[in-house]
Image (cartoon, rainbow, N blue to C red; front, side, top):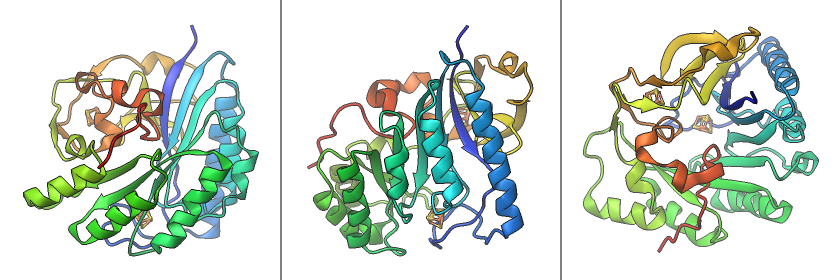
Length: 290
Ligand code: SF4
Ligand code: SF4
């Protein structure tokens, strides 16, 4: 039977060219030796995907612990994956600081980018120039911003300047309880009508979730976890029998806070909102922002 699987890949890369204050990831510099390990892991993963049956359907979202696209080996890996018959989608979370020449080597039917604008790290003009390059190259992408109150003006400008067909999401800032005033909620909901879905903490204990069955996370060693928020290993993709460890499971965490997790809760029906853009966070219909 053909395999249908979405994979969130996070290798050992743990460095970034930006230094956002709100960054949830380790801010480190990788040594050349560490990057060589990350590249070898990535090569192994791409070879594994390539060795799957051509009628398998594999969607991949790279969720690096830092910025990956500034490294040519990630650009080449994504270009290669995008042309494989068994790859239905290859997407990556990125700050879009990289040069974009490599996208011409990709299959645009499967490539998509999950981009984020970080106002303290790059000018709006520079970020928009990068978006225009993606528009010209006809690359599918979403744009996001962290919903800090001090970034509201930049978020409004970004919404005004982006192509109206490009979805701009706002990630709710949830680290501080009662952070938002009703006016803030209105403003962010005008920019991103799906903001109220993100501005929640979902009670998930004991509820069905597609992760561990149709969606998994994989690290550089091939270890499978059901999602990025539950650390138990459930197998390894380099084990020929790995598919036996994929079956429906209920969530064992009390809550789920993050888009890349809760979108896989069948009870939320968000597959109807995102369709086959679920990995790169692109809704299947145009979102009417005001
Ligand atoms: S661009 Fe992303 S990974 Fe890099 S510092 Fe900012 S939030 Fe962290
Ligand atoms: S609901 Fe969230 S935390 Fe629970 S299994 Fe799904 S993705 Fe993981």
